[in-house]
Amino acid sequence: MNDRERKETIVLQTNVQRKGVAMDVMWKTVQEEGVNVLVVSEPNKKRVKGVEWMTDVREDVAVRVCGRHEKGEMFGKGEGFVWIKFSDWVLYGCYISPNTGIGRYRKFLDDLGESVNTWEGEVVVAGDFNAKSPLWGSPIINDVRGSLLEDWMAERCMVCHNCGNAPTFLRGAQKSHIDLTLSTEGVARRMKEWRVLEHENLSDHQDIVWVLGKTGECMRGEDRTKDMGWSVAEDKMERLAEVMKERVKTMDERKDLVYETKRVLEEMCDRVLKKKGCMGKRKGVYWWTDEIAEKRRECLRKRRKWMRCYKKGGNTEIIMEKGKEYKQTKKRIEDNDQHIEGKCVEESV
Image (cartoon, rainbow, N blue to C red):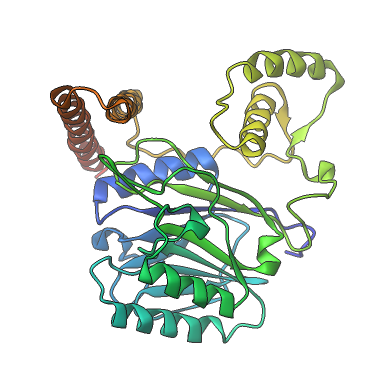
């Protein structure tokens, strides 16, 4: 497949904290977002034993190609990182524990840098670095790991794609920006989208989705009309304008305006217009049900209520009660998912 025929690459970057049920929910996100490459930090080790997965030496990070048009040519691994080479770029998945000492953190960066330096082309490095810096949204300015990573990036002329105020790690009142997406400048020009997903994924780490355009395609200033994914029909345009006008009224102004507008436009086009060159729907997650989807939404609502209550600085007992309700709902989802998935597996045998 040549460059002109290639589609964009949609990557899901996540940390499931070794939870099998979180990896199960991850596949629903893959389906919803049209993901074709996965980068998973702290994967459940039992779930990444198959030949489809590529892991580092300790199985602390795993990558997988799950799309039709992307194909890895070769891969390699080290301690805390794994890489896969595509036709015109290389993807690194990384993880380093927060309990690692500074000396070992330096060695991790040295080993990673030595591997990255072997490539003359474009590179993306994605994963959980457990480092803090204002460069990627953290309010902490004197973190040693953050300073080391900043220097490491500068030596290789890399940029950080984390944008906006959304943290990538949430645990109660604790917020951090530790899951990062770094790249060389050539890839940066092709990065069309980077966003943190605000949904319940049964992990303290938020899912990140980023979109890489095909070679030669720039993020800004280029006419990409020919690459749009819908068949434009004159009789549908009036209807599209109507639904778009109504949908804009409910847009979340707290989010990045460019990405939110693009997302809403795509959502409305999907609703009204016919997909161009559609290959059919992706196969659904076989154990996913409407019941699980509703429980997931309920869990997200309770988490938001807990966070709003905490930010307002209300009664401590009420804050604790809201937190308890969220955790209980999350635990019920985990137990329910495992039960339903197990039942489906039994029925399929």
